[in-house]
Length: 214
Image 1 (cartoon, helix red, strand yellow):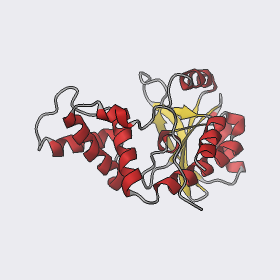
Image 2 (cartoon, helix red, strand yellow):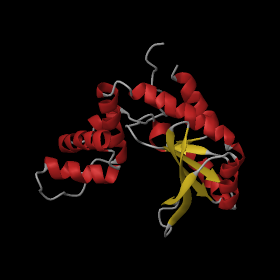
Image 3 (cartoon, helix red, strand yellow):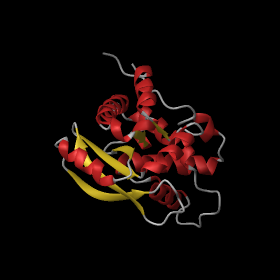
């Protein structure tokens, strides 16, 4: 079987986005992408470390750091060029994500983050979001599936909200997974936002990306 093609949501990892950035931001984005790929840093920390290296400890002026879309483009380019397992990793983790989403269908699961975007460095987890008025119902369902997990907290869908939301971390089909347990009334907010951006997708959207990757 040949190398799979990585299908990405519209507008994600667009090289033109990075090409329009000032040269210094492009350089910082390239170094940050290397940090994410090799060390598994989150975007915020990778940008700061990259800027410190490129500027040799100098002050970071406003607008100097690349935004997430620019870093997406730089990281996708790096992984596509230098990571021979990248396309297969994306396909494998999307397949695992879709299988788990099918099993969680009663909780309206959405996939977000690296696996959804098709920009998957090593050791990055699958990020899912589910919705129910009582998070304990989701937890009990996971236990019924025979899955063991650890509790954690992930950011809320509302940036201004203090604290985060309940979440669980587990392993499914040998892949790391984090599931954010959002309240049921946030479901409509996510569905509306999905029409305006490429930040997440439901089971139908993920299945379409997988179909385009063959």
